[in-house]
Length: 413
Image (cartoon, rainbow, N blue to C red; front, side, top):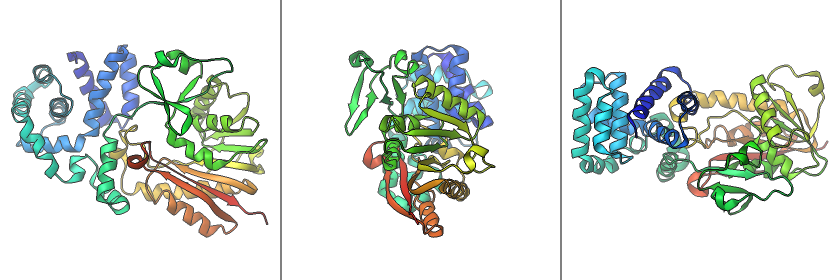
């Protein structure tokens, strides 16, 4: 890794710590501003994401190697240097010399700590199995307690280790009639059990994404669409539809359905419209802006649908390996607040379901409070609904992102 990329990594991590912005957004901005080629962008992402993913372990190591608490810059550089030396197999001489060059007045300290890490790398690593599991796998203490309560220690460790791994790229194919792409040059392989999906094993031709031949999407999202059971000519509402991946799946499952896709903000509707245009779905999907917790537009006040897909805002604990900021943004009280919003949305949308219709409640959370407890609370208040089916994807068992979905049927009177 070149010195300029290490410097960019430090600046990006500083902005991440101070601004509250998402790491992925900062990575995109930095890569665009510096006009990084794909190789340098990948190197920048690898270092920055490794620091964020292993943050708790790195801070523990720093506390054992440094007597006094370092300032923010020194701590950031020590995190970078230690993760390269102990977890990413960085070239020792380059890591030390270039990290020290960024350290200002703390050059001596950074140099000493990193050189000690080189000398004692194996003894340092040998202590890791004895660390508390939440420190070893860099999980905030409050989140670890929730996982232990719900999944037990073994599965919690498996989940934490899963989250530390880089996420593969999966693509949902959406090919125009007569188009047969060169799968060999695209370096993709089929995903067993998911006919519309491939896993990328190398760079994807830009044409695939620009012309809407494929959409980046984890197979775990298919469960919600399967529960929806859309039939020909059904009226379908995809609420909170942006960025549009599940809308595409609905179109593919039932091309003759009459689909309305809404989302809450103008920006998200623009994103939704552009994605569906690129995917050649804009002519078969009606798009509108609607926040379902606010006043309804006149056209939706009396609307009823045979099928409703509600993908609610959630903690994102099922997709931490893709959204690496999640553990460090969540607070213990967030789960209760989210449950209130989720139940409110579910109850609001339920009033727009036709008799015998299905409403599918969907999250990318693993947490029972956001999943089963919301469904149970809703059914307890609405005896005219019944649970038809529900499923959850557990990453350490199923090998995909975590997700939950439940199909609720409105009984006819």
